[in-house]
Amino acid sequence: MKAFLLILSCLTTIAGISQQRSSASAMAGIKGGSYIPMYSKDVQKTEVKPFEMDVYPVTNSDFLTFVKANPEWSKSRVKSLFADSNYLKQWNSDLGFNTNIANSPVVNVSWFAAKKYCECQGKRLPETAEWELAARASETKADASKDQGFNQWVLNWVTQSHPVLLPSVGSTFKNYYGVYDMHGLVWEWTYDFNSALTTGESRGNSSLNNTLFCGGGSFASKDINNYASFMRFAMRSSVKAKYCIASLGFRCVK
Image (tube, rainbow, N blue to C red; front, side):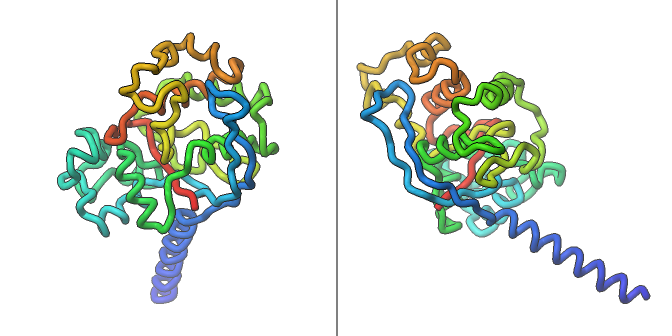
């Protein structure tokens, strides 16, 4: 009987590990569409081709597997060129963190680290247009950008204080495409985050309109009713690739 229980326990553990790996690699198909960046004209519409997106943001457990295989991205060995001093601040050591955050989205990771992680999975970071297209889906609509209730729900989240202990991935709603946590958990890196500004070619460009960085800048946006979109725009426009932020994670696409 004891032998039977031991075998059953082992099988349960193996099944759990298999399920965890499956969820970490699970992807959902996102149909293509059009995306118009904020502070742009209709002629700057971007056509997005169909792609696949991770169902969940990358977790601490997922990122630990990556660090073990790529020790140069550990806390003590990452180059300062690629990450600031907050890199993996929530981890206790190079290969350790409290088990209660194992399934929480990994944060305090730089754009460089996120990009490398995705490449090691045979994937990539989503372009802003791809992320925004997937993020405008509610539970029942592929495009809920004009849904007042949906926009208000997203706005309520972006204006809340960031919790010290992040919930597990999958704790928010599953959208139309089967993707979880596009809103309500963490902000997410995009591949071209630093091209969000459409009034200049770089942060060093003197033609940039600095009023875009304040709340009043939202009145010049494509849709003044979607303040949450402006908040994402402002977030992307204010970070650098080496920044590691406690509310900023990522997921991959291909």
